[in-house]
Length: 149
Picture (tube, rainbow, N blue to C red):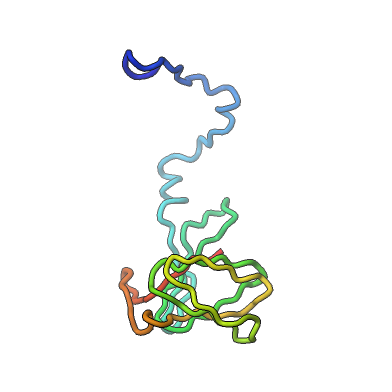
């Protein structure tokens, strides 16, 4: 029942044999959550002045989140899927198409932008006041990062 005598008394669900019990994932205990969901950051690939991490992806999730840390030009490829990006650290970046698929554009801190699937290859690099600046993230120096997909 509910707490205190001045509050309405609410029933407490103790019988889990009904529809609610069928939805509980009994195997997802503390160990499963720690191993499968909590703080799952993996380095995917790195290059000169940049690093790409996969964050939080579980095999049951359908959206992959990646984070890029960089001080120079970073190559990207949509690989046939839409890329939704957000500049989460650093003042601004310029997004460019080596093939001229779109005009270069500047993205600022906290802005979200979309790169359509058909674009293919594109690059992102620090721009304006972000050039030459770096912030520390663990052992990496980087002025900007972004999330992908």
